Length: 374
Image (cartoon, rainbow, N blue to C red; front, side, top):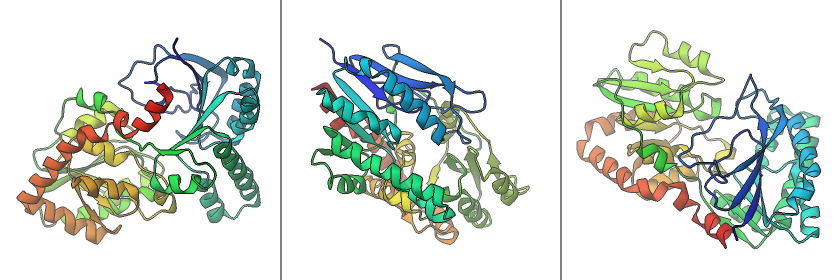
């Protein structure tokens, strides 16, 4: 008999943790809103997943934001569905855990098996409080942190994406397993490369948020183009898009796409020569693990990455990139070195190609998928 699994995931799509699961999988989702939708790419079929759609669209202001009102609506609906949850063999909570954790004691009372998957810790909310010094955010942080710890203590097993989180949550639960982020290799391998220019092309794919350091990359490139023939391709957009475009100015060697379909971005990444992770030294990067370098390696690209967290350690372990300090000067020097040193470039490329199968999320999260199938 196949396992009955219920996924508690505050989103509007079935994610890559829950989609590949075998069995009778049910996931509760928000209705897609007109203003925003959390976008994802998949290579697996989620046709076998039963989707319970809440008749309320996400209210958050950003494309991946779920606001307090959303948390309350989602949790209230989850309480209404408790009779259905009690018929399941396993309930999986995706974090950061907010009010949904309040349902966990009821589930445990009836002997239900509960897993928690922690992708982002609640400390992200604490960092927001530190910046804004708002008493309301402070109270929200304390309550959310309490719920997070309660969820970790209550769960039968906890799966985390970084060594930092494993060490942190092992204080509250002895059954904590490392299941790192990874790339959807099956999807990426189907996509053919597309080259935009014949010149040496440096590419970045992702949001233009301050901590991502896209402005540093633009400044570094302006130094590089004075020394070597090259182009910069920025695939994406975000909160800093206007200022990044202003920084780029009329430079014909810099192209900014704005929001771009994921598969289309992968085409251009695979057709580029060097991919960059220009993150700033942000506290949250020390705690979690970015998917970006995994996707870059799945594309077979050499990587230039700032030494700002475990994501840099992963690249270093595969020998698929160069680590630099998060500033425009070191980044520029490293790019010039990669362009000039053909032997170095060839070695980075070879190592990145070798790493592809190792960074597939089905392998990096093997501990999770094995445990769920038991």
